[in-house]
Length: 165
Image (cartoon, rainbow, N blue to C red; front, side, top):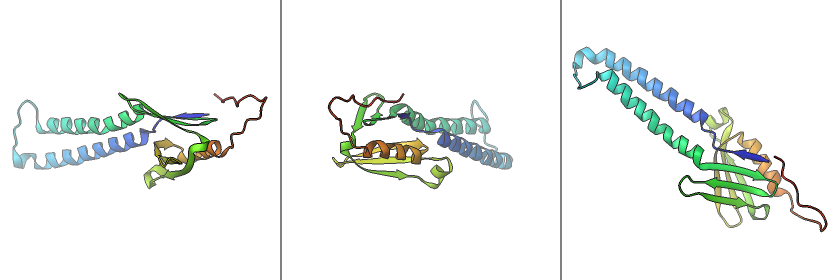
């Protein structure tokens, strides 16, 4: 019915804009005070070192987002929800409608602006499964509720429901 991964694009854009703003401010400060300090650095000039440090900070900050995107997959089927996590050690959690207890959608102000959010699913085994950075979280939550609240009753002689793909 639905397959998704964490939506990291808004956070990637936000972090990029933040690094660019810091680079502009630091560049302006370096230009304003360069004749006062007279700092000589080996190999490269001070603006080049600053640019390198800010670029490395940007790359390191994005690595978390890439790992999050690669390591999580959410699959909603007619008979339950499967959450796959992990890169080196893979785990898969399947929540059947009979084990479903509660669903909560968490959306910050910035998440509401970009139409995303986290979905927390509580099971009867008192386990919390968190689906992070889900795009269109309210619509996905409605789909999950629809699947999880549907009673599973099979009448003898009828086939099991077929998944839509």
